[in-house]
Length: 430
Image 1 (cartoon, one colour):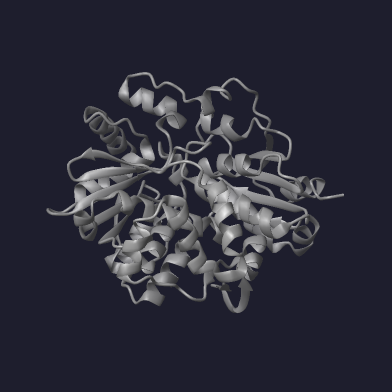
Image 2: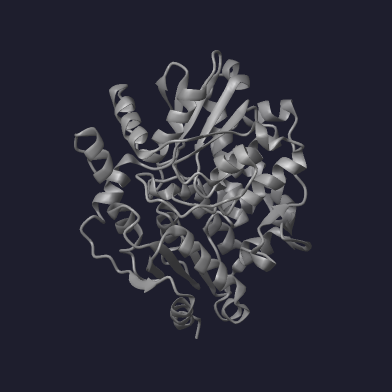
């Protein structure tokens, strides 16, 4: 598999190199040189397979023989060791529940696959994973790499801007997991990560890598659960399927669109955002004008400069698709709360991110279409806001209950690169 840097097309790397490197020169994202496509018969055959077998074939279509098929199959089996069920919410709408993994969020798929792949290709070389999180990436990456030999993990997150239980899930591990609360928003955390990757001395000293959705291994892993979703949809409904994706950093939507480019039958995708609406405004007005990030109930989507958007633009250009055809919608907190209550009245307890995806889907779904929205995290990860909205208690699943009373082990730091750099150098392999 060959990939090229979107900011410098002359930089071309293998899949293994892209996984180890994370970002290209000038902080450029890597993108596949060849976009595989399955025939309709091949798609039908794939949809008959089990989740792990199908995922191995999808990933092989991108990766090629760079990782032998048997080894890739074993890595996929280890990574995708939990289900992604489709649950009916009403007659024409269902939820793809992506929160049945160890950290109760969709990031478990990408985080665990990346850990498996990095173990495959890095061997004994020391690696420092540096990533920013707006909530769920941190837990998925921390748990995927916890205790892995020769890997140090440093996770930046915005102080006071993720839910307390999100924080407890990954800031109580210690060991090779180092968590840093940054005084600022997610965009400030992400900017610090990018500065670190621009620092050649730092990169060399720490063997830096990134584990958020800028890493191609995580992105490819996410393609697989879109196929799993469609496999659970009745065949007669697939041609009219509309999928609504709660969108912050836009990695999840990028993966869905890559699934469509492979030939997966999806009529259209909807990019559903909160009031941090850089992309919907760009699609409507044609100007990229990020605003100051606004804190919302759907904190994992509080992103004003989504990192993965250049990949979406590149894919649309390569496929000859018109960006004007990408459906989108914006939902504020008041509507998010009323939608949570509406879903609860239907017997479905959800959380703010999925509620946004449902709201835009419900408002835009046309007669004869079938709708699917992504449930990206367990409602209990947002226990305080969901309980306050619904007026009823939420029991904690075991993964959260066993960490709820543990001490947070985070370091606290201003949004200052010199301070972060000093901290990182202290983690360098001796």
